[in-house]
Image 1 (cartoon, rainbow, N blue to C red):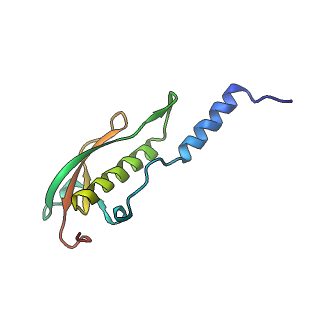
Image 2: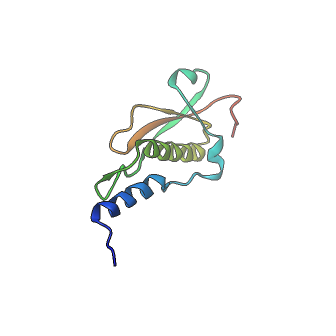
Length: 111
């Protein structure tokens, strides 16, 4: 019987973690738009949210793109709860966290 080396097992875990998405969008979250800060001048600010996901699993760094995607999904879910229809990232991703501002903008899938 052949045994896989430990490195091969870790590689398999890393590849499979990259494909995992642990954050699920709420049904109405698909209509929430991500905008730049300079594109919300005619919008009403409703609040903010700080989202957080694991950026490492078992000391293995997760894909930065996947982490960012999950943070945006959580922010969209929060926007649904506040009645918003636009989110704006307020700074970079740091240690699996990012702050978002939530807006209600006219003509953008009003809730």
